[in-house]
Every structure is written in C-alpha cells, then in structure tokens.
Image (tube, rainbow, N blue to C red; front, side, top):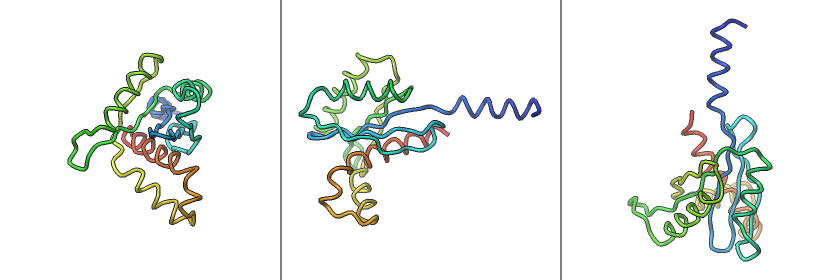
Length: 151
C-alpha cells in the first residue's frame, strides 16, 4: 500500500465515530447505536422512563459500545422554533453533559416519529406491533441523520 493510500485510510478512520442516538419521550426513550465503522445506525433498546434512571442506562450502553458521542433528538416546531418538549430535551442534555465526558449533541428530530411510523407500517407492522420498537426506530433515524452529516 502506497503512502497516499495509507493516508486516505487514516483520514477515513478519523471520520469514524461510534455514537448512540436518543429519542426522548415522556413514557419511553428509544436508543440506537452506530455500527463499528460509525456509518450505520441500528435500533438498540427502549428504556421505560418510569423504571429506574434512564440516564444511567444510557451511559451504561455508551460505555459498553465504546461510544464517543450521544446524539439526542431536539424537537422543533415546523417553523424551527422550540416548544415545551424542547425544554425537556435541553434539561436531559444538560444532565447527560454533567455526568459524562462524551460529546452530547442536540440534533433536530422533526418528523422522525412520523417517518418511523411510516417505515414500520410499510414493513407490515400494525400499530400494536409498532409500540415496542417505534422509539428505537425514531432514535435510529435521528442517529443516521447525524452520522450522514459527518461525512
């Protein structure tokens, strides 16, 4: 392998980042993780908000997967303004940042739940079947959008 080829591989590796994606909800938090190359997002887990401490579970998942960043969906109105749900996300992001040295990134999540519902419906899942995975799929879409922006 020539010097230029090695440099190209090295430059590509510096772009790869392992991350978690988070879709924050009132009842459940969807979690997605990137693959080893930091290119593709995959659904991981749904964390019930009422049980225990979801932030602790997210940090456990980040450590277990060797994540370097946590990408949290930031809900915005269609006109780009922030509403009450965005304040919950902001506080959640602040809590994460206080507990970890990892990068915690707020990412626009407009229409991810709608897109997740459509994707699951197209795959043949009815509304009842979607309930357990919809948050994970929304988190996957948030994370994939962020990963795509990194290239």
